[in-house]
Image (cartoon, rainbow, N blue to C red; front, side):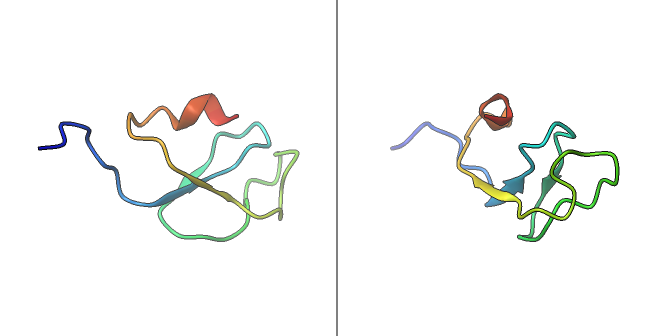
Length: 53
């Protein structure tokens, strides 16, 4: 049996605001460098979002 915890699919912003969303879309933080840019699907299993890299 796989002991690795699988998190729900989620999306992150890599623009500095460290935004996380359960749905695909764009960054909505007005002060973020990636404001209005697409969020990136995150495949982390530990909830740390690969340090947003």
